[in-house]
Image (cartoon, rainbow, N blue to C red; front, top):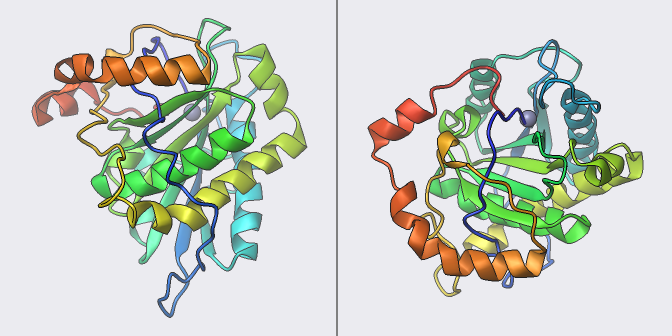
Length: 276
Ligand SMILES: [Zn+2]
């Protein structure tokens, strides 16, 4: 993901994960037609993703994970649509149009992160609409569980592909390619396969997350405030454990800061085709 700014982690995912089971749901979800998963490989073509001078190209990593995810999901009975399946540039509006043209569908955008500070690390998962939280929580749970990287939390932010999709939509950042350790992981094909399998596990388990909402202490979109672009000011690299505790303490203090009026949100997330 291209970033000209640093981030501050406001929330961990500690509240989200304990109730998640490991059962899998049938691809059809009980309906006659299979669920469609629209897989969005971030960037492509002249848009390499990441930051200038980045050695490992984000667009190649996202496409490889997306292709692997397609295979895993197809084997599980899902219908799969790719917003791109080669090294081409696809405008964000086209990506969301593809997503919105499918019924009984969900949208998963695959990205890797970047920062000018090489120490920045971890996995984070974004959602925007309430309908997308269960999917985000489930995907994040599995990807963090299957990766050696720390959790940077499930976050709510108005990325274009999340705001403009009318189906449940999630954007997962599978680690920092600007971090030598995480870039090393990403360059390993078996690790990318693992990422794909964990994302798929999250897709399969999303139903068990939503069904737990009413009875389990979980984060909601009120406990995960919207995080606009310019709110991210500092990178922290704490362990999973300390981050989670710290985030829980900090969340209430930061709530007011991150609550923006819709107009302000729109202004701050003025889109470009290079976001994400
Ligand atoms: Zn990206």
